[in-house]
Length: 150
Image (tube, rainbow, N blue to C red):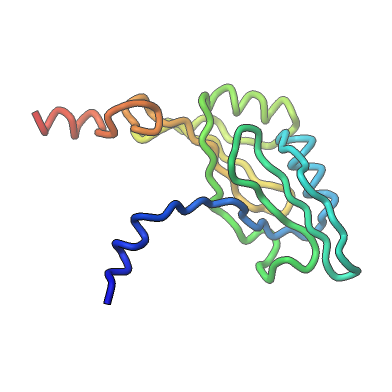
């Protein structure tokens, strides 16, 4: 019998689409496109029961989808959607300038964060990675980890 963990480690896994539960498709599309600046990839009415909207954040390889007949999740029930941005303060200012109700910048050792929600209450976080993060080109070791390992 093969080791299932070993087989997973050899294949690429790409997160492509995250479904967002919304109550009003047109209102959600307007929020994501007009206020967040997402690109509208698809808006297809398949039948009276199914409408599929797919949007992509600028620069992202992963899209979001919502519509009618796509999910059994309660609108507003998704609370932890996180995206990475280069500058949390600039992102906060841009969101506020587009009319999004957004938090101030939350500075933590592991990054800077801003929080907001869509009209249904689905919660979003934009994170600026700290300089030491491997995702930002650093070593991946937090400052106190680097100091104790020397």
